[in-house]
Image (tube, rainbow, N blue to C red; front, top):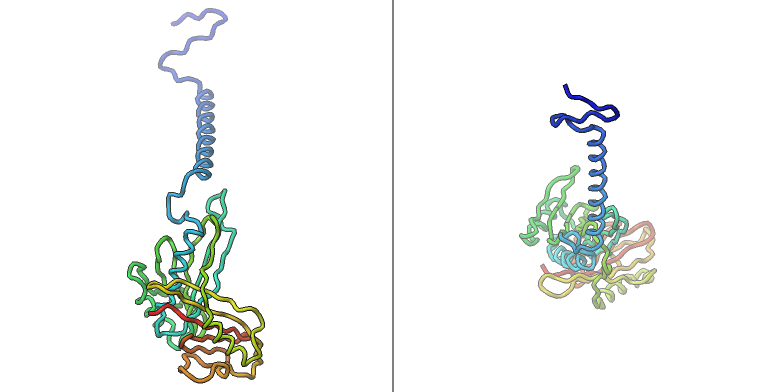
Length: 281
């Protein structure tokens, strides 16, 4: 038996563990310190480190990839329909990290076609670069074209209503950087054809919009867009005269290939018209 002097705590034998409370306090303190250090390093990395993966490239870097993709999509339509470039859509407010916000850029091509949407999408997929690995599957009972244009730019194609297919290229959420600047081009020929057609209905009711995209083999795809008032009892085809046979000719839609190609769509008492020179197939 070990003697204990009055006024002193008994010594702890070598094989007896220390106080559980003391070990718990040290464990909690170490965990908190590690969490604070990790949070600080994360904040510093987000603020100062350069991007390490391609999807972090900003819109001013990803925008030209989207523009080239749109040109390639217009070329891939070939003789399967009448394409027209769509205005870009820039959506802000997505989150790249809990700290930083970003934006998504989407550009596209609408195609008026008289064929079956699935067959048209399959032929378009076959004409796209093999590196895109384009294919057509079924989603919600509808055909869906998917492809990867590189640099994390996603391509989709889907029906957009009767006789219409929509092809889009999207960046996903990116840092804004210096922002996206759409390409420009001289679309004098397309604008003149548009003005002639709309002049038969009294002229455009607003300014012309010119859209452009670089072509894979050089040159530029161009679309001029405008709107006009058009009573429901007036046919669309009458504004475009004789020439190449239309691909679509109905009460609400009209599309014919040519130089330039023309696409018109009635919406209530207005008609939207696009004159386009696509990239060569």
